Length: 296
Image (cartoon, rainbow, N blue to C red):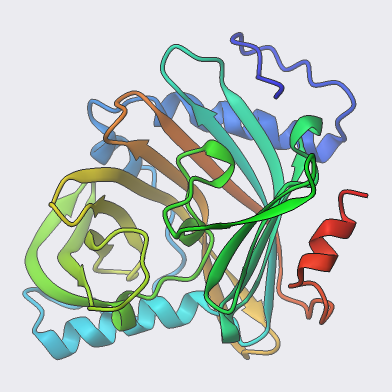
């Protein structure tokens, strides 16, 4: 596996201009993400939410209002058609060289289909994950085998999970409790606590959300184990929306996700989403045969 040099000089050979730009962007956000001592103000103050389209809700929120809020958040991230984007993933681990992955991922939100294909580094090219019929599979082209994975699978060994690339399902998969109206950086936020409903297949059974009252963008998430132990903290400093012809409305997505590992302190992952495309995908794309063909 190729590791990125420990110095900030970018010397990636054989990469196109788009990849070079992506790596430069990763370096640009890296120093800001590398401040775990006070990430709340540093990240939230830099947030650039999509334009507000709602009347801000004043806290506290009752149960029906919370349910409606979460349903809006879930719904505006889903497309009635397909979703394709490039994802650049930078993994930083304490006492190790940084890793950078160039990937492309695909979604069909109507039936929860999902696939992510690794393009670079060359040693990872052709590797991928495919979710079909509520099962997550990982394909390793070096051995030509598929293995079933859980929802907590670390994508490519990074701190990212499948749910980081999918639209959220807060309203359907969780019950919710209002904690407080708070301030996160310069934003007024609704702080909610969520618990997974019995029988739901989720990566983490307990969540805490900080939602911008003005735009209803999620700015911060804490993910916890069933015991209540904090596992990951995520920040969403940049949201964007793009118009969908099939939906006849906008689809929202985070342009940047900063993930902090709360178990292995000092480990963190940055995900950048670029070149979002909402046009229809080939009907055979969400199949094992299609993914296998990419490594031949």
